[in-house]
Image 1 (tube, rainbow, N blue to C red):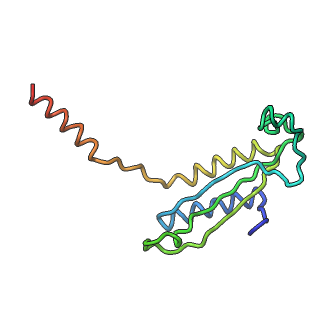
Image 2 (tube, one colour; image 1 turned 45 degrees about the vertical axis):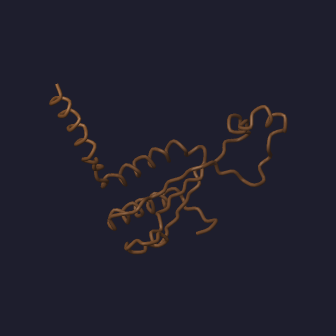
Image 3 (cartoon, helix red, strand yellow; image 1 turned 180 degrees about the horizontal axis):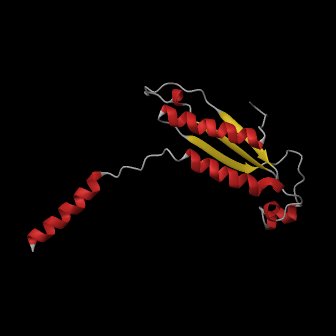
Amino acid sequence: MAGEHLTNDEFFKQLANLFELNRTKGHGSVYLTQKRFTYRNVQLPSADKMIEDPLWDTYHPEQPVPVLIRASNNDSSKRAGTERKSVEKIKISTVVQPDQIEEFYARYAEACKAGMSGLKKRDRKKGKKDKKKKKGASAETKV
């Protein structure tokens, strides 16, 4: 899918499928990234402005810049020594226009929350609790 971006609605459908795929197989990660979608032919500000503040264009853009959102799963077949089934690498992306940012991020947050609903609570190591108990018990016996 190189160079091809999904519409926002298609992206959310595919993102839900990606979360569901990882939930059903019982392992894996979904990587979500976002960045400014700049074009190669964008005019840079003058050298004086760039020397004063290298991020000048981020604070004072001539026109709002779209955002590129990407999602992918990890490809477990590349890890050595794993006995997990190989899963095809899935990459999806969409471009969000500046006037659609707020609506997109509201849906994006809901999709991410729905995708995290199946997560298990992290197991804490019992060793740390045992050490604290032993230190407390040994202090009491010494007194």
